[in-house]
Amino acid sequence: MNEIITIVMLLLSAVALSTALHLYHLVGIPSIGISHGLVYVKIGRELTRRGYKYTLVVPTWQENDLKKSSAGLEVKSYDTPITGEDLEKVILKEAEEKLNITERNDFWRASCESLLKNKDLLKSFKGHVHLVVCDITSICCAIVADFLKVNRVDLAPAGFVDPYVSFIHNFPSPVAYVPYGTVKLPKKLAFLDRLQNLLLYCLGYIMHEFVFMPPFEELWRSYVKDSKFSSLNDVFRATGILLIPNDFALDFPRPFGSHVKVIGPILPEPPKPLTTETQNFITQGNPKDLVLVSFGTVISNFKSDFLETITSGLSQVPVKVIWKFKGQVPQNVSANIRIVPWMQQNDILGHTATKVFFTHGGLNSVLEAAYHGTPMVVLPLFGDQPANAMKVQEAGIGIILNLQDLTPIQVTNAITEVIQNPKYKENAMKVSKLIRHRRITPTQEACDWIEYGLHNNAGLHLRSQADNLSFFQLYLLDVLFLISVVILCLIILLYSCMKYCLRYIAQMCFKKFKTE
Image (cartoon, rainbow, N blue to C red; front, side, top):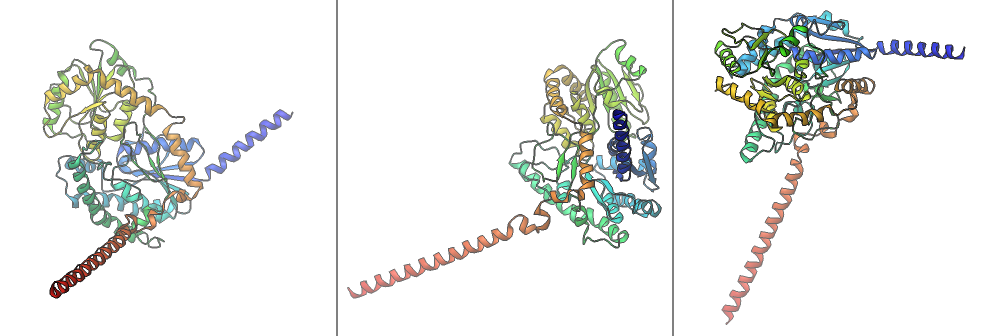
């Protein structure tokens, strides 16, 4: 009888706890782009499993792309003039170095304003949402959190991306050894590297403060009339937790604030069984080795000469190839290449037959390959991809190719080198072991910190006094100025004393000489 009462009490307690948790409503707002959305879907599933109500907010066009992976989650979308095709055009222009600043700002501003204009959606959240999980690359999300008057926890799916994330969250990013986040700079910076890094940091700060932020500051002032903050920078610093889904097994070690939590890669996980069709393609017939090819989820309309270069290079390698590509299939594709619009990337990377991952170098793709111990050939296209490619090369787990002078023979030679040279696989397995060595999964750790932020005022007590210091105070320029003034005064005083002494000695000598 006592056992039955105990069981009933436990069940009632569990139901009560679940009901209490479900009273908390969390909203996730990723930046536009499927890879960022997938991170938020995985976190949302874990939060839902823990009993919280979770809503994913994305543009309408992105909701369709995430429909399969987000099944079972509450997804709310908003209409926007920006589409996936527009995003692809912007990214292609950036890859070709043809994107001007005005076009970039107009694109991201239009995307943000579409969300802020959706009054019905935002009003449905007001008073009912307890925490917003913000993608740090979406400046708009912080504005939404301020509009809703709720705390937020920030997540950076693209990693540190110095110096922009460190500017926003105000934590150290030493120029001497933390490379700029969008260029290929090595782990150990030589003199010219440090000079280039300093110039890029200075330019980055100017662009961030005076070019990228003003359009969003204007939106914030237009749509959040009753904010308690005096500037958009203050809005950004209104949270105490920033989650970085990266790992120093691959990333370059660096300092960061106590409110910054490096939680490990979210998307990689142990491989699941492949579809019968994919499994048969990999295992039946010769050759036995497999190369996986993917250039991300954004670009599908590559130029024909680029596709021909890739196809020709892949056809010369004696391997099977699975290439994820949604665009116009190139002509004369050899029999060893299978082009598919979608694939189980994580699961194929974990297959024993997969010897090389030919990738664009997006952080999620790189971390998935590193997690599974799969060496890479990296062809960076835009954004943080050149920096990610350099980290792959520095870790000894892959080779970098350059888009500007790419030839079929370079593709062939790079893949052949990574397959035949055992050092790449050995290094990749070492990195994989480091990434996997965790007591809990990165998704669980992310949700632990989100819960912590929910129940502890967004972890604001974790932020340092750097937020309250001016530029001159933070870098001790006022102290250095005072010390310089004191030293200058001492030098002037010493000079005056020496001058007086020398004059006195000269006068005495002159009098003595005159007397004689």
